[in-house]
Image 1 (cartoon, helix red, strand yellow):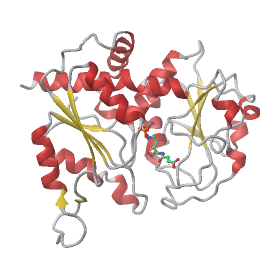
Image 2 (cartoon, helix red, strand yellow):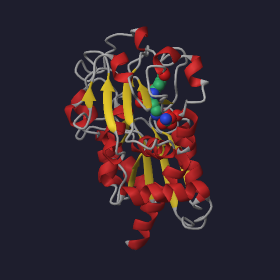
Image 3 (cartoon, protein in one colour):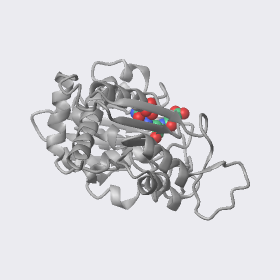
Length: 319
Ligand SMILES: NCCC[C@H](NC(=O)CCC(=O)O)C(=O)O
Ligand SMILES: NC(=O)OP(=O)(O)O
């Protein structure tokens, strides 16, 4: 694995899962593996879990970590080729990526969708330019359209709670006041073929996702019907893909409640966090024994560690 941009970069997904399970049991089992190597982490957007879990995973492997909040701590970056840079952007991504690549052995990048121009967002311009100009492996810390580190932690969490039968996983849209990216839900759907489960996606009309992400799931517009017999409820808000970046409704009847959870097969509740309480899901759901959101967050460490371990192994083999 040279880069970790999406699930498609995994050469042996099951081996990665086992590696994450091993790191969960014994986080320091390879504590010198990364000695002398440096991981750079670049954030164009806010983060709590990704920032801390990747840092923790790196420290467990003996890596050095450097973090920068781009646009706040450093210079505003120009992304367009050939632009005349006489406005507010002081540095071009070509130079910035090359410089960072010369200081770091690999680089993690978080750059959310701006939700203004669908084609631009889905081309993953920032990530691709880093890949092109940094000259080192790139790690996706949530890009415009994908969040593979989250999906990997979700997969580990699902495996820890897998019922004896083939589970039914329902991915449900839930209301939110702001326009959010589609990255988490796209990415989760992209990882579901690894999960040996029936996947049902439920959302209001107008919230259809990009066709390439919904090939392995059934779409059910009636949320209550979708919940019947579910073993896992994965809640997430996203803004419209079709009417790109728009909030089409904030219909509170889509909120996850204990009453709705009773329609399921004693389903576990999942969310990637951060979550707005009593908007996406009510307190009683988040404070219940069937809520897995904190376990998902915990699992961000061993899964990130497995990814870093694999990238490091590849680096070492190539030198
Ligand atoms: N990394 C996990 C999710 C990040 C982002 N959520 C947010 O921006 C929530 C912000 C808010 O609730 O105001 C998203 O949906 O992609
Ligand atoms: N779930 C997740 O990626 O959280 P952060 O946005 O806080 O990193």
